Length: 342
Ligand SMILES: [Zn+2]
Ligand SMILES: [Zn+2]
Ligand SMILES: [Zn+2]
Figure 1 (spheres, rainbow, N blue to C red):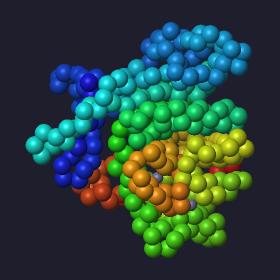
Figure 2 (figure 1 turned 90 degrees about the vertical axis):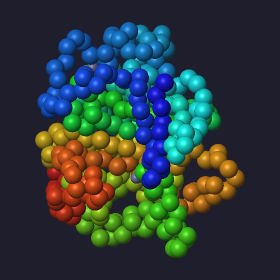
Figure 3 (figure 1 turned 180 degrees about the vertical axis):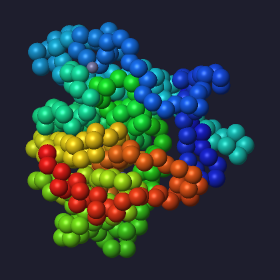
């Protein structure tokens, strides 16, 4: 059973993923270079037997589960960080807090074709991926053990993308709210308390006016390089219309978001020579807590996607301070990405 442990000083939870346990001598300090892939791709159509049994699939001709005939599939992770069965048993041990590592860890296989980068899917297919994120978040919300679902993507080996070059993303439902999300919620609420406006809405308005860091303005969405970028060519995608909840997107908005994502990811691919990248979806946590707990979240929080090309490494200063050193001005990065033709 994996375990969640809380750092007693700053309150950060970590996952001790014992399911992936290796003996200490199996860890190797030299982890450079992409390892070779052997055997057929388990995520391609026809190889369904190589993945755990599917949780969800789009099967236009109603073909049988775990057989060919799908165009998008979700399966449990073969090496989950968290386990779906059991209860949390949150407890204290002296100064320490811990609980069972309960959660859901799912892999979204975004296409039946052997395509590596989401940038190369068509808009309709990306919109289907967005719909399946929404369906899974809504379904996982029914499990009252969970407080949050993080949707994310690791593309390329240096971004944690694994050996197999078949486009996929992941969802992890957690029994505690992630620290990063809580920091954003707290910051947004503080700004709202003072200004009675959403900080993200204000930021969007300013970026649309100045255009200094604006990459795209498509229908209901914008893509910007954030003012205080942590990483070179970091990009945020935000809905122009205020909403704290990603799952509230209607079908037209899903297609518009797909269009925006395809453009941004294609610009990164073409402009930066197909870099590894991560993206994360930041949306409101499940709102079924104590009365009043998320009282103002509908007004003060604004969902968004953060895309981070992995072209620099986090080094000692970042680890030691929480400061990030971004080697290019966000305005220059935005100007470059704006000019990349896709
Ligand atoms: Zn494949
Ligand atoms: Zn807003
Ligand atoms: Zn965020």
